[in-house]
Length: 62
Ligand code: F3S
Image (cartoon, rainbow, N blue to C red; front, side, top):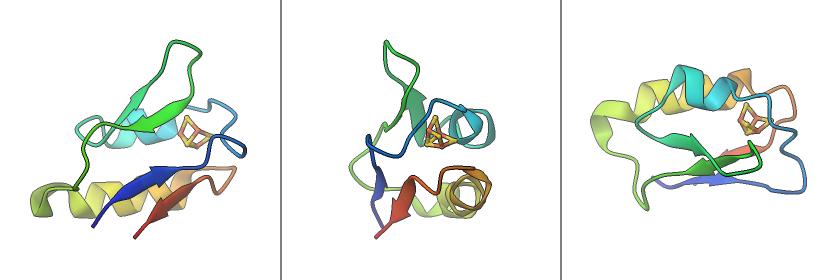
């Protein structure tokens, strides 16, 4: 599974990073970005929670 943040939708709410810091970071402008090419299985549930909690629906898990 890969995590992808849509830069056009992300508004920098940072919930992804707060919920799943192993998978999501923030760039220099405070926008979310995936830290790993593949989401490790042990972090999948928190990555899904981060996806559900993004107010902009900017996160895709594919
Ligand atoms: Fe952006 Fe959503 Fe994270 S708006 S910083 S992807 S919680």
